[in-house]
Image (cartoon, rainbow, N blue to C red; front, side, top):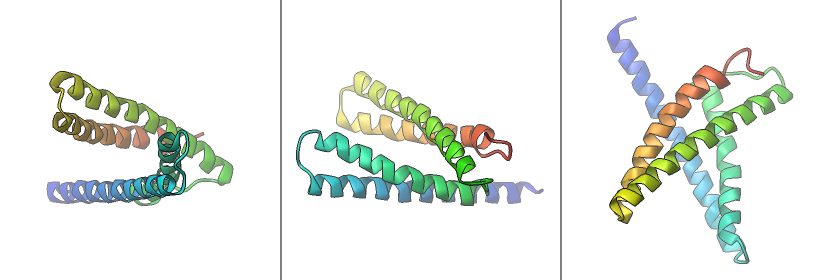
Length: 143
């Protein structure tokens, strides 16, 4: 395979991965906003984050499973196990992202630099997540 085809394939993959992340973010934030609009009681913020995550995560999973990894589950139980493994990898990379964002916050003490740290953490976290999913989650012999 020529270098041009490899670069084109990597660029296509990166674009799709970015688009799918954006879609999941829109679903997540949209559901958070909807929850805050509907419920303003105790723990409204925490509940909205939980609902947003619960809505966005499966959307990203299905899009990546089909269009990034071309993975097909054996059955519903198998798909559930793969989704749990996918979710676990997301917890790990989210903790990594939060650590970098918080580290920037501690080092620079400004909102702007915390956002830079967040962007850096998200970028690195998504690259790590892709490789973890490719290596451990979306395998024919996964659980």
